Amino acid sequence: MSNSTNITKEQLWQKATAYCAKSEHCCAEVREKLWQWGCRDDIWRGDILRQLCLTGYIDEQRYCRAYVHDKVAFQGWGRQKIRMMLLSKGMDEALAEEALSQIDEEEYSRALKKALEKYKGDRERQIRLALQRGFDYGEILNSLRES
Image (cartoon, rainbow, N blue to C red):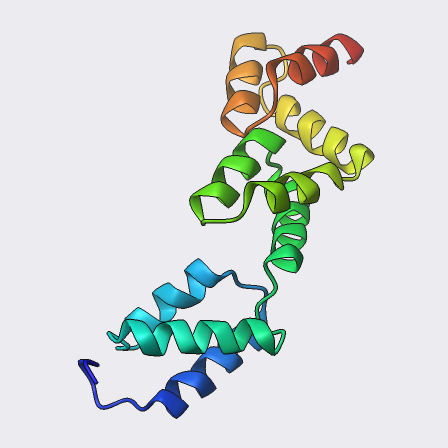
C-alpha cells in the first residue's frame, strides 16, 4: 500500500477508535488525523471511515448537535458562525440546520448578552464583536434595545 510509514490498517483502526471514543468527531477531522498518522492510502482511509460510521464511532448528526451546543455554551458563538464552520467541515446543510434549530433560546440569548457586555457603553464595538461571533444584526439590535 502507499502509506509513508509502516503503520498497519489495524493500528490505524485502533488509533481512530480511541480518538473517536474520547469526543465527537466528524469524518473530515478523522480523515485529517488518519493522514497525520501516516495513512496515505485513500482506500484505507475510506474503509476506516465507513467502518467508524457503521459502528457508531462517527455519527455526523450527533456531531452537529454536540458542536452547536458547545459553540453556543462555551464559545458564545451565534448561528451564522456555527453554520459556516459546520459547512466548512463538510457537514450536510440539512444536518447543520436541524442542529441549529435545536438551540436552547435562553442559552443563546445569554451568549449574546454576554458578548454585548464586553464593550458596554461602546455600541459600535458591541455590535462589531457580536457580528464577529456570528450573531444576526437584528438579534443584536433587539438585545441592545432590551438592555
